Length: 106
Ligand code: FES
Image (cartoon, rainbow, N blue to C red):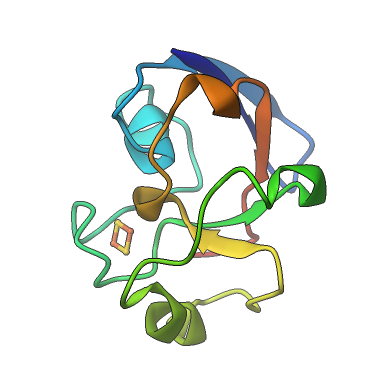
């Protein structure tokens, strides 16, 4: 279980306890957090679960998934060095306190 903190561009912040094994995307969708659409349901095929990972957590969220890099070229908001698809970040205890910033649009 880890507390994941989702921050919107409007300055809203949502702190959600997400079970280990779930993804950061699922934590948002199951809790009705606006700003993550996840149209493909987590198959790494839509890029509508794009987030910007707070820099200090970049070494904890793991490597890009096999097709994630390609999908990050399709994001509606600009892709940056700290861009990830939240469906590809699986929650572990180590991610407790993880902050992800939601992009302006998906
Ligand atoms: S939910 Fe579609 S790419 Fe993540």
